[in-house]
Image (cartoon, rainbow, N blue to C red; front, top):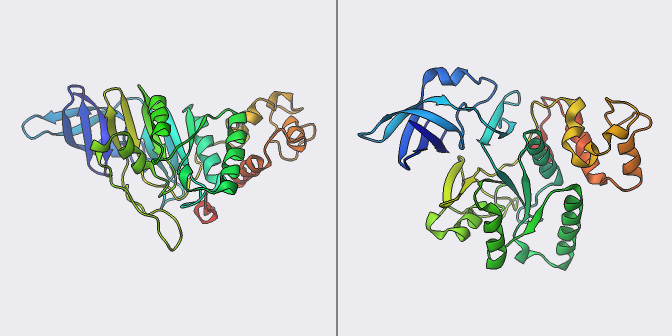
Length: 312
């Protein structure tokens, strides 16, 4: 019987079958070693085959069907291993807040690079717009201009402004949408505003660090309506890029990708080489300095680097 994984708790899974019945499943032992480079062999969004017990709605996942894409990051506890957040995504929505909590630009660019590597469209969502003062709103507008110029669509939303959420719901239609971002940025609140019946648990902001508390422990998919599915993910404190060849890193920065064929050397890293079109564009102000610095940060990362300590 075929289905889609709606929830994963690491060892147990909830699978919705093609006939709209939910089964509580485990996985076959041999699945655990088929994908040893990741800590989780089955993830939310996976299309799977299950051996079902229709008497008590339990089952065993016997096969994971090929994924069209996925979002992956370094494992929280094992820097040499990877953790797949979710798979088969039509749109990834990256939440950004300038305060309560503050989202580092390095986090955004690392997420964007990973999404580019797996050809996942991204919408950058500047959320909680109702809490910003005039100066903070100017910063938001400058960031929107920069990322829009690169080619990433941006939206501004607040649960206090229903119209902004209506526009967001339209962007989600007929898609499987991944919501991602730091803890406390408001992912669960947006889901509840779009469909109050889902009643997703909402966390609070820690007064001590002004960072979000982890309320979503495991990724979980919800049917927003008949044509839209939303994947709520745990708040991420760090986003380590993994399995990426340094010589190809610039391919996942669209503004660099457009210029790389103008460089003198085909394998230009855009760091120290002469006649580099990217460096020239940087000097002329056509490439955003902050993005370039984040490119360098990712480029010089090694497997032992504590990127979470940097706030990425």
